Image (cartoon, rainbow, N blue to C red):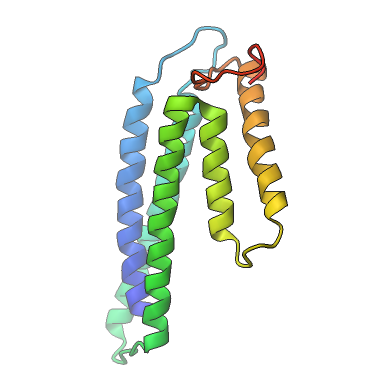
Length: 173
């Protein structure tokens, strides 16, 4: 099991590194504002660099474990329960990407607050280990967080986030 997990970590690290490179390259197409000295692309670029660093750490750790595993002569056999767990994790990862892309699509069409709400609500509900418990807390977090982030970026940093065509409240949201 450990060897298979290490191989998956290595592949995941490589995919994340490629994604961070693509993400970083796309930050140069962000429209620049001249209201403050901080560029609109600064925070996405920082996020891409942090993601790249994390993926490099994952790649290095996985490569080291694979190298150590090749020196060992014992092979670990997987049982049915472990393979079922890895299938379940793969389904969760796929659902997470669907939630991300739906959130981005909605953000592009309706605005940041609505897209971020869908993304947060979907992600929090998916990661909840005990369905039905504390759903009201997840709903509050999903509503308050996008509004606070939107107001913070617009009012404090003077960076525009996508308002969408449902810009409600006379510019408040």
